[in-house]
Amino acid sequence: MAPPHAHVAMNRIFSGLLPGNDAVRVPTDGKSATAMVRAMLRVGPSRARRHAVPLLETFVNSYAVESVDDERLRSRATMAIGKVVKVLRGRGYPVGVACAKVRGTIFAVPYLVDPDVTIHR
Image (cartoon, rainbow, N blue to C red):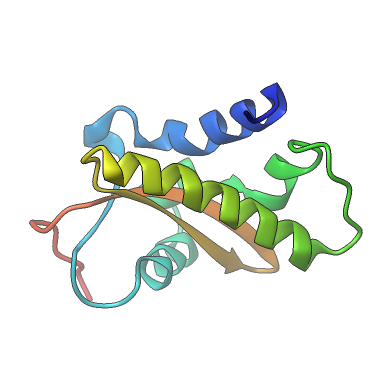
């Protein structure tokens, strides 16, 4: 079982999925979700920016594991997020979290997979 700090980190990240009509939505085909979210974050005010959570700041000490290497911490954080996403998808929820790097900061942005959404180019 994960420690309480980890639960707080996951709640902070996945809170962007609620309410559902305000969540970031990505289509089922086309570019990767991370590439789409990265583009949304660069454009300016958007749902993606509103729900973006700095990944490393959110996970520092959440698993009581210290690391001087940001890449190792990023890897641990994305693996933990992936486990939660796998459970949610297994329960029928079409969700994911894109970890996109913009201007030197990695942001975690939760999203819903929506086959009806279109990306304007």
